[in-house]
Amino acid sequence: MRLLLVEDDALLNQGLTRTLSNEGYAMESVSDLASARAYIASDDIDMVILDLGLPDGDGLTLMSQIKGRKKPLPVLILTARDSLDDKIKGLDLGADDYLVKPFEVDELLARLRVLSRRISGVTSSLLRCAALRLDLAAHQAWVEEQPLSLPRKEYMLLKALMENQGRVLSKEQLEQKLYQWGEELGSNAIEVHIHHLRKKLPANMIKTLRGIGYVLACEPQ
Image 1 (tube, helix red, strand yellow):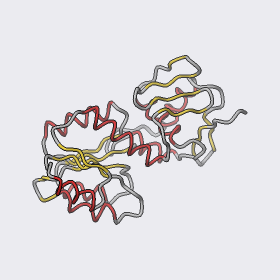
Image 2: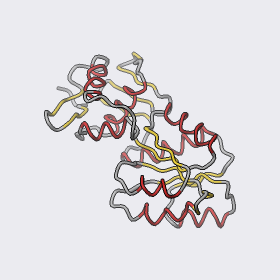
Image 3: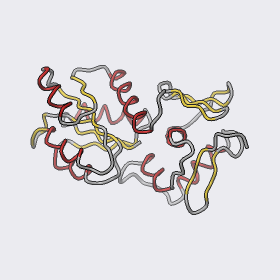
Image 4: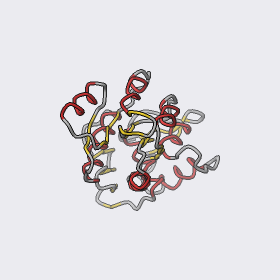
C-alpha cells in the first residue's frame, strides 16, 4: 500500500517515514502543499497522512482535491490543532480520521490498519487463505502453525495478495504497492519476490495469469 505523508517537521517526517516503511507501507513523504498536490493528482497513492500547518498554507485546502478524485483516497489528519471545532471542520471536509499531536505511534498504526482494511474491504487484522494466516498487527504469517520468515518486500507482497484474494493484481499494481517513486527497481523484481514467496507457501497458492498478473488461490485445488 502506497502512503503519502504530508508533514513539514523534518524530524517527525523522517521518523514516521522510517517507521511506516518498516510496517510494510511504500512511503512517499513531502513537506508542503505544492508537492502534495502533485502526488494527489496521480492515481498512485492509496492513503494520506495530512498535517494542517504547512509552510505554504493550510492542509485542509487539499481536501477538495482529494475528494474530487475518481479513486477514493482515505485521509488521516495528524495535527496539533486540538479544538473540537478544528476536529469537526476536518471531518466535515472529508477526512476519514483525525489524530492530535503529540500521539502514540501504536495508536497511529492501529488507525492506519483500520483505514487499510476499509480500502481492501476486509473486516479483521487477521487474514486467512486456506492454511495460510497473516496477522497485520503482528506482521507475522503462518502456514498451518509454522511461522514464516518474510523479508519486508515479501511481507508487503503477501499482504497485497491476501488483501485482494480472488482479484488479479498486475505486475504494475504490485510494483506500486511495494516500491516508492524513484526507488531502484529491476525489471524482474516482482517475479523474483513471487518466486521466493512461492517457496514458503503451499503449492499452487499463487497463480500466474500469463500477461495479466497474479492472484492468490484460497480454494482447495
